[in-house]
Image (tube, rainbow, N blue to C red; front, side, top):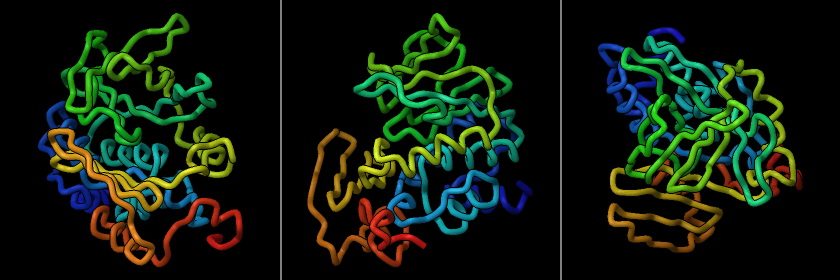
Length: 264
């Protein structure tokens, strides 16, 4: 990523170029990203290809002002951090679910080195920490999203816990971006993937969170108060535009790509 592309990315998330690649700047970039770029799986239901390569993910997130899921969000964030002088490694994880751990390369997260030490950065896991977690800290780490802890497993992996509940199991071996292609393909095509079964677009706000799941709009405030309402079909596109900055030509529908109504 060249300087112009990095500046465009920083403008996309409303951040200024840091004077040095330190932990404080990483925290600010992490939060700015969560508040500007939504976590969404709309491509899955619009029949859009998801290509894990530098230019496609930057075109989608920066130029088209869209969001994405973990492979796109953390992949793009890694490119930005690298351009700003951080040392970044891509790590594979498996998400804990009702039936145990998910598939290999189920999730992508980042290990980021700073002068003060390493951090776990993850802006692609839905309701995750607002700020990076200290990689080498095994004590509880308080965050606006909850209390997090990193635990070592007997196999040398790391379990990431939120409020005592395991979220995902993280490998410590660095991976190449292309290594995640199979996991990405599975999540956008398998009937067993929750991304093919549901439609979500969610963004952290300055006072809470806003989420559109299908046609259900949920907003939460700083006090945890939750407001939910059903969105009429004629206003769905306006909601995507107003709350997430996403401009669409048609409403995404679960399963539309497989019925042939959303494929391109």
